Length: 557
Image 1 (cartoon, one colour):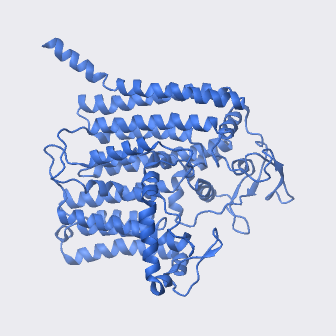
Image 2 (spheres, one colour; image 1 turned 90 degrees about the horizontal axis):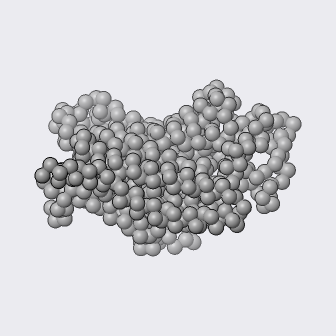
Image 3 (spheres, one colour; image 1 turned 90 degrees about the vertical axis):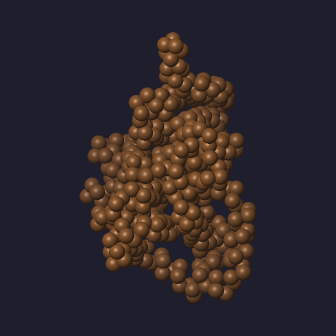
């Protein structure tokens, strides 16, 4: 009997091993792809770097397996205790495989964080025409293959041609090809070629008009690099690392505050798209972390708090005020507060005062930061022009005069684009929505199934949400999705389009956890609780995705 118990303990200790062994098989298979790319490009170091990546991926896979399958059971740990290490490990791998400025709109977020960094350091941030000033050596990130000299003012670089022969500036990571890896490898090995450039130059990329707070984590890393006089690559990598640390920290705090469903939030945080964004300079990190924490606060006040304190109202108001200017469509989520019983506020008077504080904070910040943009869209007589399509776009007046056309556009979008939203939400197209950098459809289905399994009711688990609460959550999620489509209809869709343009699946990630939590029911109940095993499967899927993407990029000459 003792021998059997010992054997059982050994099996549990190495329960993560089958996942690592299975992961190693496609890992060595993709080595062939990398070697083919190395032969074609002449960059033999690609294979060596891939082997280092493979070793790191297998090590992270083993670490995640040990944390999820062994440590949580032996030491009776909660899933929240192991999330920070799991999230940071996988995030760092995504940060390395998908290099700086390759994420959606990352160049604009980089410029915005750079501008805030200059304010933080007390240095000039903008030129006379409003463009952001960057160190001369950092122009390299925005024009990787270019040679330039500064004009007489020392502010505006004069192009002398480009090394790739295209005649156009190439941003690092756009597109993500084998040459991107080569530039990063050569720069770290030989040093930056324009390291001697001094002074400030003007970036052609405009910053994002939103609350500066959304770029505070990234700006911290950029400021540290500037204080240490580090080169451009270290600058963007440090900005990404601080952004990742912020996301993991706030998501961990949200998990700790959740009265239930921490495994669901854990699963959403392990989606390839979530990890890719969290390891970038994107302000989506600010939005995701903020909405996750807001959701946790509302659910904690609903289920476990005896009463709502003034500090709780202040936290809810602060989160909405900080997140609101980034994407005003998530203001719909303030309705989650309505689930909290009035009695916990101490009566209708205090409830109304609390509601006014949360709504007022959001409204005030929106007026200050986005007042001009909002006024442009709400004016029915204003003609909306979509610059990218060079056509007239939709306005609120269109809803009044052509309601049937608007409803048809919404219907077409739901019918034709639902699959794309699902794929891009999970992470089928990584990079700057690059269809080549894909997560295979089979893995998208596997990750989607894992989320559903995490959300379903387990044996002995009570239903925390009533039927009315679940319906209200569905209404809020539908409202957020509808507001997202409306905003992109006004901002990005020409009148000649048959579907709403510009909507991406990543916009649905902030409310995905609470939507999944509302799926628990009495009809579908799992016979056994397998949360830790499911999360380990998601970790292994991410590990394979990283190996696959590196192989694809190595062959993308």
